[in-house]
Length: 138
Image (cartoon, rainbow, N blue to C red; front, side, top):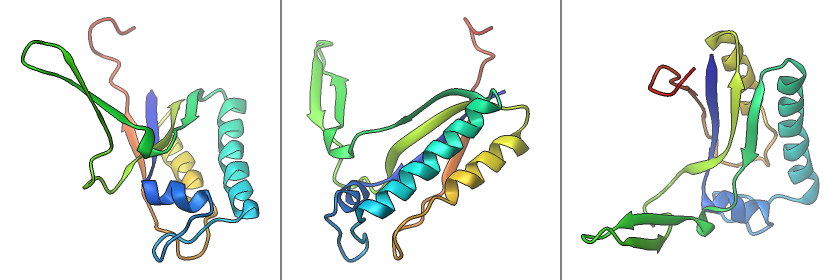
């Protein structure tokens, strides 16, 4: 079965990773950033070696987000995002094809063990099964 494994974050996390920390989000140094990238790459490489990898991507900072809606005439309305009240956003993801929920949970636990600077916020790693039963699905 395919699963979406999601890592959460916030704009403040992206700022901290760029060296601009705050009281709740300590600034990352180059070694800490490299350790995070090395950890995430190892998770990805292991899943690929096991034949479980479908896709994996880190996402750009939330400040680059755009929301698109349509007005009453069906014309696009584009606004900057995320909204000010947004606390957490999707920071990256893996699409994995795993034999069981237990296996994808093992991978999510590996992701959750990613090294971060002391005092950094703790986010859950979210697993969502991908529904492949709808129209047009194999």
